[in-house]
Amino acid sequence: MKFLPILFLFFSLSSFAQSYSVQIARHRESYKQDFIKESYAPLKEGDLQHLHFYDADSAYRVTANVEILQNQQVFKMPTYDGTSKEFYRFAKVTFSLNGTAITMILYKSIALASNPAYKDLLFLPFTDETNTKATYGGGRYIDLSAKEIKDQKIEIDFNKAYNPYCAYSDGYRCPVPPEENDLQLEVKAGEKLYTGEKKHKQ
Image (cartoon, rainbow, N blue to C red; front, side, top):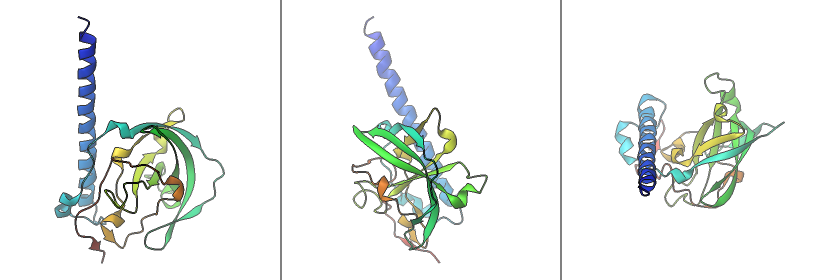
């Protein structure tokens, strides 16, 4: 009988891993479908075969401590087309990832903050040691919501990290991740390099 709790724990963990993988698979399928639905998107249905992702790994889903930043000035975040977009630093998040202590900044877009549909959107752009080798050289993004902050904590799931449109086509104003969000480790989670031919926006 003493083995039953161990067996129960094993099957519980196995079930959790499977359900988490299913959850990420559904998220990625929805992500792909958004390209088809959005006329502004750079990819069409035939291009989706060239999208690639790391296997779902719950080690890259972390609970971060949140410090809301006060009296932050609006600044211009450069974009890869040579222009810029206005943001402000909304919060500092701290957490441990694969045994490494990490500090990152969440940003809010000035343009989107005035839109009721996106007023709670938080932007987490970052670069890491996989860039140019296994992932897009310009870094990746994660979308979060201010509503997800509970008791000064928020869940950040790097399995949901995605490429900016600039990874697929020119002609888009993709923000360059600020240096303060450059991670000195490999984040082997989320979207990988696009293997299709880069497009030219008309």
